[in-house]
Length: 337
Ligand code: TXA
Ligand code: MG
Image (tube, rainbow, N blue to C red; front, top):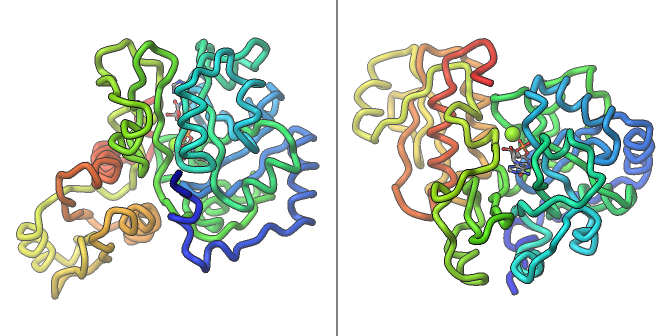
């Protein structure tokens, strides 16, 4: 069995240990029906008691998220699956055993009595056990499920640092637990187990091939009528600066000539251009992507040119986020939805 916690945590990040006093404060706030900024290994979440309908409505209000978009419930361990899912198949147990704690969300048929705010009125529920020491400490102390969408305003870039969460919500969210920079950096892989054949609804750093190695072939998602997934909208994860995906040559040609352009390069940015570079390994690129987009978006440049990563399975999740970021970019107001 692979240990995803170990795989994705550099030693420095493993040393982020939960502060018991802050965990107590956070649990008390959650029990009062308040929201808490929670680090996970993927992105920061905006956490609420998943059994408390009025707390859940605060999540939608703060995020400005449409009420019918379902939330992922974070659990302290796979033992809690039975409390939230109606039928837990062999396949679900197998995936939980292999990938939890870790960046994998499973969609299962929902148990009775879960607030409709969590499910968006659907018969399914998204569940995951995050691999972050602070999240796990919080979940264990709370001893229940925490609904947590990414802690950003609807349609915008997910936060991967505590400061990004505070920048997003300010005083409206007084308690943000700082768990350091997220080590995965993009949202979890979502696998739908509520249909006859499992399929991937949202690509993430756990790839299809890794899932297929454990549970066999996945179906193509488009074969079935899919449940609603806000991350599946064309526009999402978007900077305000218009974002264009280009190859290296175009990047060099345009960015070298135009001072109003910023670049996000693969590796070192070309000489004479202004911007940032991210490592050419998909894991490291994903880890830095959202922080880089936030940083580059600050300049309010005329255009943000992003060098296109290779079109291969290891890059699929990154390419997915870049595509949505491009589609939703260039709008000061909320994107569609
Ligand atoms: O990595 C992650 O998954 C992060 C961290 C905080 O755990 N969370 C996250 O949440 O990305 P959010 O709400 O930004 O995206 C969750 C996605 C949404 O697209 C939502 O529609 C989908 O999961 N989802 C949740 N429950 C679902 C369900 N029952 N059926 C289909 N999609 C569901
Ligand atoms: Mg999100």
